Length: 194
Image (cartoon, rainbow, N blue to C red; front, side):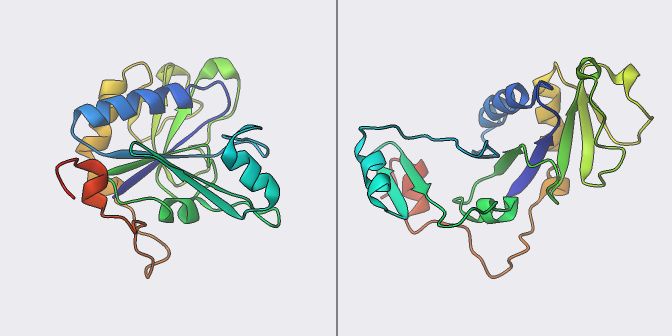
């Protein structure tokens, strides 16, 4: 499994780039998952739905599944911030995990940087930034030996990932933790299996 983070300030284009990369990697035959950092009170559920009612009644986890998708909602009993590694451990094995928003995570990252935002560049002080995707390479605050990718060319960014897969190979800090599953993973992705 390969893991790559996308860091950058709000308005830099991280979400758009990740969305485009999902399409490009899928076209290349890759299975892609996403881990996204959200604001404190995000919700994927809403009042009136059965799963919302179960959570309101006090359920620690609610799993909703159909023949097409599965969603799990977990309520933390005390406020906590899970690490990116804990969230990756929740995933079923795949080819690529694209991580958005864990700016300070200790994983390889591509920084998404736009001069027009007026925000500082992270690559100057973050050794985990392996490349920079930008629309203004001539305005980077300092020269770099890292690859500088065209933010407006998602095909080239996807090709960078595919050409450098070894760089993004994930090694869990939890060596005894196997990827999630429980279900027959082949059946999840191949209707002919199972």
